[in-house]
Image (cartoon, rainbow, N blue to C red; front, side, top):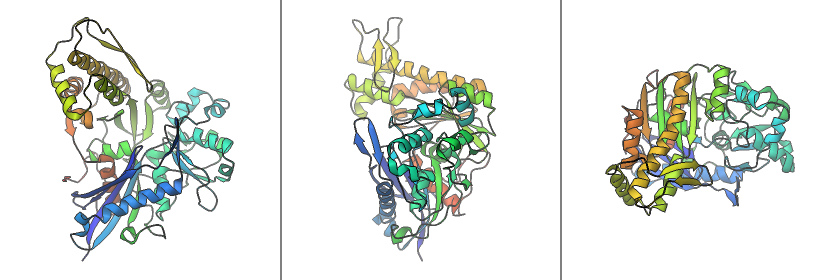
Length: 454
């Protein structure tokens, strides 16, 4: 008899990662390949078909690993797909891609056409995000204005939605990803009328939550090992990680310390539009959660990227060097004349107060504390709207640095540190099990039913 497994795949900015997991949560295998962006300076896009083929190949590789097949015949019960937001595939009336998929960080986005018909305030109140070039709506407008074939588009699918469709699944509109498009009225969970006027009604009419079934894998491009698996869109990658970490519950805080620091608060129900406007003024997005009937507040800060730059400048270029630097930083005191962070941006950061006698250890302590304080501003802004967090989960590679761990402990108070292998893909696999009916959604406590082992 075939042994059952679940596959979770995370289509990330840098790479596509897939895990093969037992229904009890035991991780059997991991496969990955680079995300096939075509780069030209700051521009990056992908051929949607090529991207789908890479994702399918990674899923098949994970399911065909000897650690999986060595247990006997394999039955993939479900495939959950999570990943990046803003990027998406435009499909024509035949269901075929008709334009490249612009990366979420690609600056090509026609925000001017949106500003011409609506105020920034109304955009924020309706969509839960800032009016800039990042949302999918602006990328669609740019594509329609610059790529002739894009004029044939009748549907926009976010990347995870497109992968499910390419695997033979249904065209669906998943709540947490649709929240990032700028085409969804965040309060009504319906197409935003202004976006419909600008680009047409491109969101799939079938609205789902992450973990709802969206067809089965099949078709010529899907290998035999994956065929018949129940498919689901597992939502935004950050949120899939929140769910599997046990932080998808009302009042909880999830603090992910990766290249970007993602600060996520989960709240029950729908945020009032006045609060949505104020939060987006502070660069805090309001999205639907992967947990039905919940929303999240999401603040992304450049903490990890800045720590990478500063540690490299200080000569700590690997994990051991950064750990030693962190331990040294804990042993020094910060005085009035210590260095300080003056400015932080995508392009560069500025340090001030570098005088005689300033050591790498002191510089690291000050940088960590100042970046922690910057993130703390966003935490306080969230708390001013939805109240203090009732629990906190800390995750990500930077939590292993002694100085960072100390600063976060002082900021968050009592908290749990979670170290999971590829939490986005793991959360996607769990939601695949939910879609297949062999696992249950977390209840009001936000706790998944897995005790994960590797």
